Amino acid sequence: MCGRFAQYSSLNAIKGLLSLEKVTCDVKPSYNVAPSRNILAVINHNGNRLGKLSWGFIPSWAKNIENAPKHINARMETINEKPTFKTAFRNKRCLIPADGYYEWEKTEKGKQPWYITLPSGKLLFFAGLWQKWGNGESALFSCTIITASASESVSDIHHRMPVILSPDKADSWLYPDLHDDSLLLNFLKTNRILDLKTIPVSKYVNSVANNSPQCVEPLSKNI
Image 1 (cartoon, helix red, strand yellow):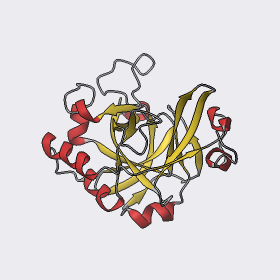
Image 2 (image 1 turned 90 degrees about the vertical axis):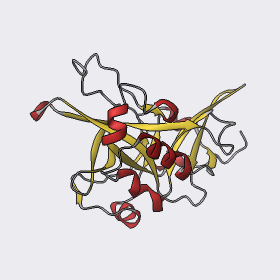
Image 3 (image 1 turned 45 degrees about the horizontal axis):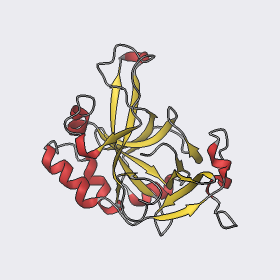
Image 4 (image 1 turned 30 degrees about the vertical axis):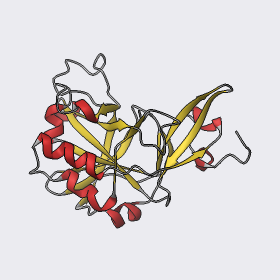
């Protein structure tokens, strides 16, 4: 799964990898993004737009926000079959820019946090879905991150991982005229990045209240 990540790259860094027609929010660094937070995401609405979505997908048919399930992840293997996601899979796809994500490994000494990123350390993109709930001023725009089985580079830490798209292919995920399930699934399977770098970090990141560069600093001692 993916339940915490870092999103601290600048707007210029995002623009350097993805064409944006409109930016509707401030871009501020966050080193410890948690569920229910408003996160940076790109959707295609008359061109690529960078804005904020609430992390925790709420189906459009939910009766109310308070009791609605808020899905932070969606499994790639069943995404086109689940009633919650199948319509958004065909029509409301998004990209979530990130610098890396966190996962906790179960050890004899407790849970050890790891920061997982590209070997280059450069910006990456999670494949996601978004949805609108409600209308007018009460409307809420939410999103989820798609996950798949972990690659060998991270499977010792966790059996799932977010679907990370290569920058040169990420824009195609937003293509508005692509609706075919088989083509979309094949796109995810053939364009996801599997080779990642794992970095042990301190338990400082465990608290969602901590949001500083210290979250991603490598441990200076053996774990």
